[in-house]
Image 1 (cartoon, rainbow, N blue to C red):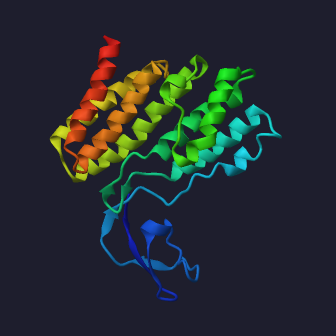
Image 2 (cartoon, rainbow, N blue to C red; image 1 turned 90 degrees about the vertical axis):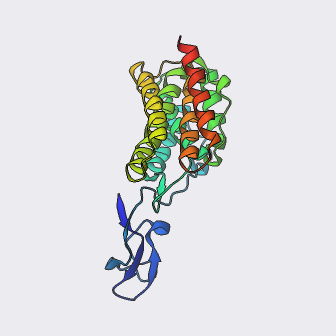
Length: 239
């Protein structure tokens, strides 16, 4: 959406940046009577921090299903606020967002399972331990029981990022980037059509391709080749 990033309170005169607070309420007096004083600019992100400490503190007292459910909800609240266009600039696909989406999907899956098995639980708890810092287990550690939610999570990550990429390219046309984005979209739709049941390595490659697409759009010429290599790896696997 387009917003006026510089705001002024009509009650006390305070000026602030909407991009930093994500609110039209005055940070000094709390009044909601404020006006934008600059031009409308595309902005989709909202200040948000993923803090999983309260959930981790329950590990010794609650069941895995309870912890998984609470984790999924906390990650859902975080990802709802996140976007990738900040004051008109396209931002990278950051590792904390990727980890949060993965944890949300895996947490939701485990919260619905009567018996999840040790490998799935170990993976979940390892992911829970570092997701708020963007730390994730290696893709070759994904257990077979989590193959589907992992695939769906990576597709969801790519979908979220590409929505903002398309918005950015609408305002800043770049035919080569648009073509590359289309290839990424096709692979994402394939994962969704298979309900996430794909090789986790391929799902992970797609996230890397989307991240490198963003880097290419924002000026890293070599990122185009890296993104193509990630997609070639997926295509070679599916031949």
